Length: 458
Image (cartoon, rainbow, N blue to C red; front, side):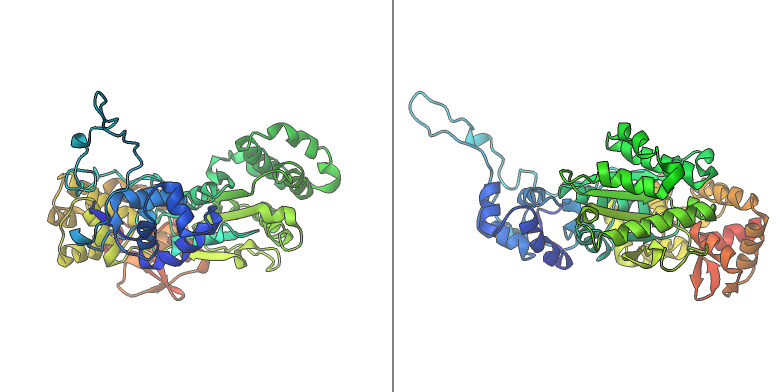
């Protein structure tokens, strides 16, 4: 960790605008509240280096996750580091009295926490990256745009990317940011729903309302709202439950994150009703104040290949986010966080194998940082059963084996070196699995690892 930190240049406008939202009309008031010099706050807001401890303290005051906005690549000279402004009451020395804090025991700048810290212990990647993890990599300006958007009345954010690209991790950070700004938040994954929940729209919507109500500890009001379901329909009952209880006038805004929405694509009738409802609720915010307190995040992997009325779909409104793979600079940043002093050639060698896939890059770096393998060994054994990616590759092979059409489509892709034209639905599904990437209307293997492994197995 550097001795000082500075704000990323692209984050400066958003952070400056967050002053007022957090109750600080001026830099002076923020400085007084935190007990630090106003010049330190000014340096922070203008992208100049400030002491590590002060940087974190200001971020806390503004409700920001410091790791998300710090520029770890900027090197700050020691003479630029501002002095620590510690909020410690020190008694005046007088005969017979000891200082409340012994000044001789306070570490100097060179001894304190602003000394460079070692890289964090490697984390085995899998699933959502913890909010406090040192290994989450920003993909500017995606995070800052999402953080700004989710605070807007009636906001809708749509996040789409293949599996294991960081969608759930991003959603968690957006929800965390909303919560820091006073919103109630609920994260709901449709993977939690049992198969019977998808029997029909009525059952699904009742499960949906019950799941949200349980998280907000307002489940007891649900039966009353559902009494008229036979007369007015489940969509109206769901809307009434939100209006009368979850979004009452005295309540704080509600930000709802819906993960794994792809499961609904397998049930066109339910998808048509539910996504139509989400679009209707989003439109309500344009004419009714109560719905301005409702903010929505929709996360999915697959292209929306089911037919939805353009006026009933939530997939053509709001802020669309497509998560890209890591670029070389981001992979280099991740290597440094693993304590790997890699050259540009080392970065290129790993990316030549797995591209910028966040999961595959992190998994490789984890094992290299743990000294399980060297980079050269990893590359040579990657597409074999002895390689570190064998479990990952076998899971994909097992999934393909369950669907003959997908198996044949993937075989067609890896049998040639040029892009292949597949049926739209097959291409979308292979892309959502992360196995191929789309180039126009054609598909190619997402990375050399998949080309080699499935070229040998299929």
